[in-house]
Length: 78
Ligand SMILES: [Zn+2]
Image (cartoon, rainbow, N blue to C red; front, side):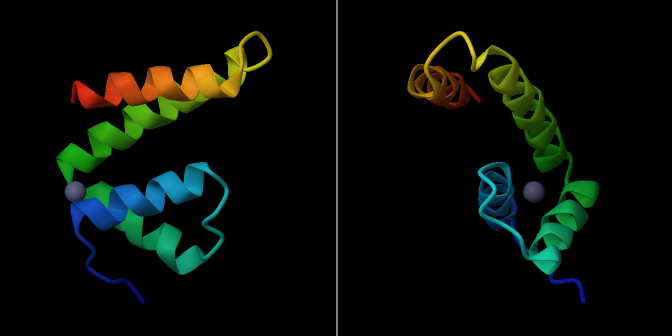
């Protein structure tokens, strides 16, 4: 069953998903459903996914805390 969730809920669910804290398939389906219909969340999730892949690639070379701060700085610009 799909719920209509707002942008904030979708992004929060997505962050939890990235952190591995979201294992409820319904919640994952909810934000994916929202992202399919919301252009702004779709772009944001694409950016986050790209950043996350980048972090995973470079995590071996720098500390995760430094990267997390850098990403937080980046996100303030959006
Ligand atoms: Zn949205």
